[in-house]
Amino acid sequence: MADGTQVPRAWDRHEILSLFDPASGVLDRRVHSDEALYRLELERIFARGWNFMCHGSQIREPGDYFVTYIGEDQVIAVRDEEGAVNVLLNTCRHRGNALCRAEQGRAKSFVCSYHGWNYGLDGRLIGAPGLSTYYHGDLDRSRLGLVKARVEEYLGFYFATLSPDAPSLHDYLGEVGRIGLGMMCAYGEVECVDGVQKNIIDCNWKIAVDNLFDWYHVTYSHASADSAGFFDISEILHPKNQMVMLGEYGHAIGGPATPQEIQDQIDALSDEQREAMSRAQPRNSPRVRPSSATDLMGPVGVRSHGHPNIFPNLWITMSGLQMCLRLPRGPSRTELWWFTFVPKDAHAELKRKMIWQANHVFGPAGLLEQDDGENWSQSTRAAGGLASRGLGARIGMGLGHGAVEEGPRGERYVEGLVSEHGQRWLYRAWTEWMAARDWAELEANHAPPPSGAV
Image 1 (cartoon, helix red, strand yellow):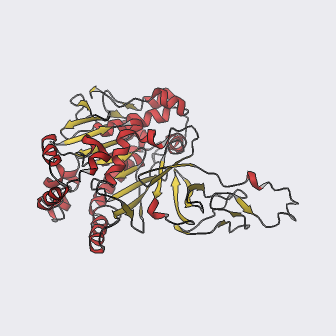
Image 2 (spheres, rainbow, N blue to C red; image 1 turned 180 degrees about the vertical axis):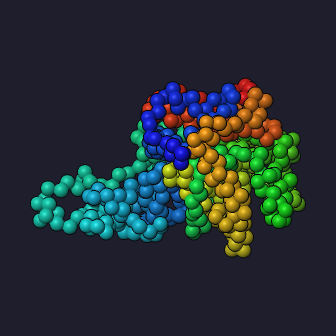
Image 3 (cartoon, helix red, strand yellow; image 1 turned 90 degrees about the vertical axis):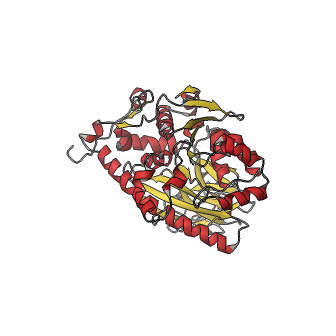
């Protein structure tokens, strides 16, 4: 069609697997524009996978809640009277009205504003007006509680899945996913700052995800930040000291890494000496991690200062200061949620400085995000064009030139120059998730972290 709109269609397994060729790095642009593929993503990726909900510091006390999403399904993450965290579908079992309208807060129960049905913090239907009169005692409350997702946590970060067949969160994350979350806690316990920055960009959610592995664009796309003196690109890029970690189910980490010979020198230092080393480094250099971080992240993971993505859509910034959800809002719209974290025991002035930095780097007011958003939007627009969508996208940088190494915890990683290994791993995993009809098929057919040449 002239406007680029595509007629919805069904996709079979063979067609889905043909959308990305790992051997050539060619990606079919319909991956970023097709309505039917998007609808299938909601079912086979978001409803099936483990989705980040919130951090424990956002719901400290019984009744504290935070409203978020699994795909396009709105859910309430709430701590109940027993201290357990529940994730409840935010829709009344009577007529579907949303129970909770505020983004976060504290409640004793959830009451539907339409007809007054009342639900406990554990999702049980406590009561409804007219139980004995209008319903003649026939309403079975035990069968009409709110739909509950499975909930598990790691390091205080809560995840939920709508799939009863999904593996445990620990197994789902694997070593690379756990390293990514460990990056947030490498310097000690953290807490989430009140207020989540939210904005919508006219882009496909996967373009916003694959960009976090992309260190090729930094010099050019973010030249304005460099020329404005906001940061020195040469201090953060390290194009020859890159590490890409490839994990289970599509998790990956990509970006700068501390060379092994330098890490060996760091390992011989006390934590006090490491702090002194951090203070002596150029501005914007990553802080040297304490010795406890090696226990948390492993001897390979502790060297990484890249960007992790917990598949499908949770980005952790290289500093461990922020996390971002890329929430799908259609094939060409993504809502970005930026969470900022600070050390729990830090003094007020340090927290203020960290929040200032977070606000000015990423998020709707962030200098870098404004550069990226324009590129993502234009790339998505081209993916829907009648002629341009047939051209394909090429993510073959470094293909065949990477040698996978294996760490002592089984982690797989590639070191060397800036590459597109992370992007290729993302889209390979995406095709496998999309082609699998259930978890059993996904587990049987997904590619394990690779070995040899990539």
